Image (cartoon, rainbow, N blue to C red):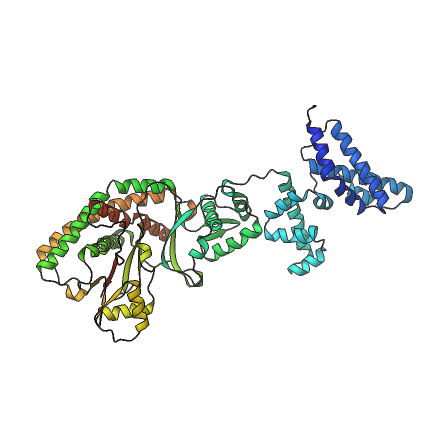
Length: 536
């Protein structure tokens, strides 16, 4: 069997894909069907003859349509000699001398898949005009009226868009890695969500995550993002608008830049390794500080809790609470982060930090949920085992108020439905006819001051832990600053928020306390109120 040559392959491609298109090309330009058939046959003969002679065009489709238009120009010239049907000016317009001249007819006749591909990566400013003119065959005047633009502006935009379309058709598009290998990004947020669930309603989608990671690594135009992600611009543009509206992305000129920090896998690995080498000492010092303080309370006869929860369970909240006291001191002395989060569109007040998907070891996350005022419910949410799912993310304002009244022994028997909800959720139990909380409740006015000697020793222990935390914070700060893109280096608020977020030691201390047996949790553990406390 003889080997099929490249010329043979092109002849087969031409026969299968172009014969019918050439006929309609001719039919639109000549007087009747017979003439159209004759002209199409002449064009086909010329194409096949050149291919058999060994012609291997670099841009096959453009080469075919060049032959078609030149053949038509010759046909017009011949008709002019016989019938004077057209002017020499028209013939001059039809002749093609430049192989890269993408004219109106060539755009219409070009391979549709290439044209659609390029339209998919053309911004709406130009795409709408191209589609209206070349696919819907609308006049410039009609397009101008529908867009509210002068005809001259539409004509100018059409000319520029044709050049862009020509350049795109002639190049070999190479989609970015994110087009076939999308990445995941994990986020930590602090603050209050927007009216429409922002930012979670936006960043839960893989498309938006990859827009953010791409524009973070390299500021890009909408077209560049579309090619990197392999997503047509008509679909991408709406997501970009939402991300800009929520201030997750900002636009500088034609470039989009991600407006939050995203920690790389390498940075996460470095911070984990540094923390893993120190967490044993951190945890030991925090436990020593807690135990000394409670010992002083007992020696001084202070009632530091109301006895609603076993001490073994209270230790979960005490550990996290004590670290947060150190964390707050560090913020006040070094970071000076106000805690006022960024005001966003649609009523949101929040800050966000992203993390590239990291498959190495990491400490579990511990969140802190509450209302932000004394006398309201606080709860650490442990992303460990199945603890987090045992209690709701937040309590309603009605539930908070009822819980506070019960803790103060001021419940008047009203809001029975709300109290029953609290019982069902596990926050309240009814013993005989009396309601009691099931977790740690602390009345601050029942706790007196430590003696001078006790305070001095407590401060010494506190400063030892503080210094360890400061060293680790400064290390985290160096890691964050080393990889901040240039367009975010002056945003100190974002930098401070990121440093505090990656510095968070709650999860590391929690896991080390479990490892040493200071706190315990079994596979079949049914405890629900771990990490909850009410400080009044």
